[in-house]
Image 1: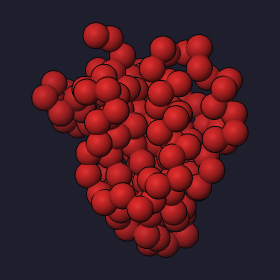
Image 2: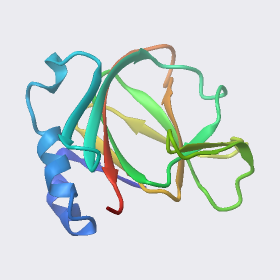
Image 3: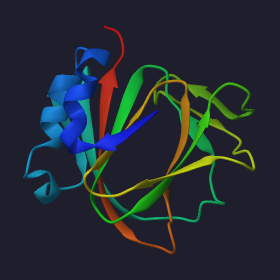
Image 4: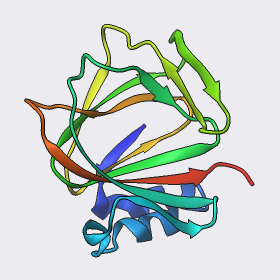
Length: 153
């Protein structure tokens, strides 16, 4: 997992050939004006979703992880906690669904809590189990962009 400011995206361009295009999306000043939904950048190789929701308690839900896609999560408005734990050693709560590219894992008692707010991005790789959309101090309205970057052709 990587957490950094939008000003430092240049540091991560070498990690994947599709990151440059993904970071261009994050710099689009019109993102916050778009409706919730899925938007193609390069077919299924790079796409993003805009979503608005109310954060939930950290004690609810299970960690998730993906195999085919890297996530870049970026808040346009609001603040949330993203729970994180390395995938290794977690117990499966729901087996991997290849159509949805997601598996769920039981959340251990101790997880790393990452505060996401506008200006910060979080890169989540397949070994990074995460619990997004959680409350900091109470329910908060959030607008988020999640970019999905296909790992392989």
